[in-house]
Structures are given as C-alpha cells and as structure tokens.
Length: 394
Image (cartoon, rainbow, N blue to C red):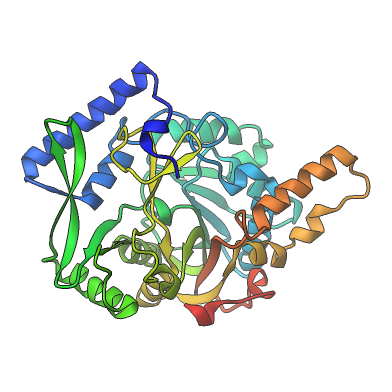
C-alpha cells in the first residue's frame, strides 16, 4: 500500500470540498466532545453533498478511485441475473431490489439478461439516497428498451409494504461504517477521532470500551486470537449488519438476498497475524491505510466478517442458503457457457478471456470476494453454490 505522501494531490476545487467536510466534522467534534471512528466514517462517506458517496465526484472507473465487478464485465451481472431468475420463477410477484447501484451498469445488464431468459419482473427497485448517483443511473438505464426502463423504480428508503423478490447488494457491506478496536493485554480500547490543531489534521485517540456490545465483541475476538501481541491488536467491528438485515427481513416475505463482497469467515478475519486490521482507503486506484487523508475524496472500507453476516441473518429470520467464492459462484451460475462463442472474432474473445481471469483468478477477485445467499420463505438448492458450498466454514 502507498504511503499518503506519495499519493496525488487533488485539484484546488476538490481540496476546498474536503476542507468544507473537515469543518463539519470538527463542528461535530466540538458539539459531542469526541467522535467514535464509526461516526467519523459515516460523516466522511455520507454527509449530504460532501461525503464520498454523496458528492458528484467520479468514483468508479478510470476517472474514479476503484473498479467494481459489474464494470469489468457484463458477464458478472449476467451470472447474478441467472441466479436471481432461479428464485424469481418461484415467486408470484417477482421483483428485484438493488442496493449500491453505482452508475447503474449492473441494473442494466441484469434487466437485459432476465429479458433474454424470458423471466418477467414486476419492478426493478434501486435504493439510492444520492441524487447525483440516481441521475447517473438514469442516464445508463435510459439506453434500455422502453419496456425494461419502465420497470425501474428509485427508492430513497426501504419499501414499507411486504414484498417478494430477489435483493442484490454488491460491495455494500464493506462501505458500512465500522467501529475500530485496539486490544491490549490488560484492556480493550475503542477508536475515536480527534483533531490536532498544530498539525491541522485528524488523528486517532483510544479510550477504554464501555459499550457492552463492543465489549462482548472484543471478548470474542480475544478468545479467537489468544493473548494480544505487545504492540496491541487492531481490528474492526461492523455493528450495522444486524439492523440492516433486520430491516430487509421486515419487508421481504419470500425470496433471496445475494450479497457479494470481499471478506473472510471469522476464523480467517481475526487471525493473530492480522494485527493491523483490514481498514483500507482507495484514492485514484491506489490503496492506503490513512482514513484521515482528504475526507470526502477517498473511499474508506473494511473487509466483511461473513460469520457475523450469517449469525445476524439467522437472528433476522433468514436461512443461509449458500456461501462460496466469487469464482465458484460465477462458474455455477453459467460463466463458462457465456465465455465461448464460435462466431466471436479473436480480439473480442481475448478481451472476454481477460475479463474472466480478473473475475475468477485467486490472485485477482476470484477468492478474495465471496457470495452469500440468504433466503426467506424460499427453499431452493441455489445453482450458484452447487460447485462448492463453504457454509461449513462460517
């Protein structure tokens, strides 16, 4: 990972935007006395108009900070569509709900694939809070045939009425604010954010854990790693997963939730060797570990604890119907059928081969990204998990 002094300096107008957000965070610091890291991360990513995901700055692609699987190849979305179709065909009222729709690329490709499969959908809902992203999604989706575009409905909150459907969330969990923990031999500490006036920058500050939920989590991690190293053991806890899954369970009567993200099972996540945690920042396609670098201009993420996802899902009334690597999920959902076309010219064929390598090779996205399926009122053997199901590792 790059040290921040080697990262590109943003243009003056972007620096001014970051300064405006930093001022808002400093005001919150004065108002509350201190900010947990989760509170800071929430403001850095989601403050209206200024937070990373709420601003009009490019995020995905060459002009942005990172690339996502739907932007690498439509094959990714087509495989998701095939898995979705297997569930949708069993529902009386087939709907799709997408979280974190980005530029709308995945929504477009899923709708086209469902249409090609002759799988009807009543609506394709996109849950989107950002007006800027919604406008970009609309531009992308307007290229669809009218009959498909008319199915798209934007929501700025979760559905109020009971609904059947397939819910898709690609790289949503990793962008949820996390608590930062530092475990030492004689105490558990919670990460807070303070502002250093002399250095004119935000800094870490640690205080003993007083929250019972965090203390319980810290005790669980200690039982996993044993005695903390002398330097301390830093890690993250996502307390948003359980309420988010519960809020989905509250409206979903029948269907499935497909979550795609990078992460580990709990045993892998909290290894003694992973003593610096998984917090990562992405800025102009460079990864680093300083969440205080130009707030609002960079993505801040943490890996997902899929064991915590499975436990929270069970508590919310879901069944864990499958868990596997992205590579095995895509192959189980028809990847290989889409990769070869004898009519295709050599240039296009090589391009698709490279896309498939990026999506499936272990040193690319194939193993670091996982797919977990949660079902409710829907008892199917899901195709995406038939090659390799890793539920026993959760």
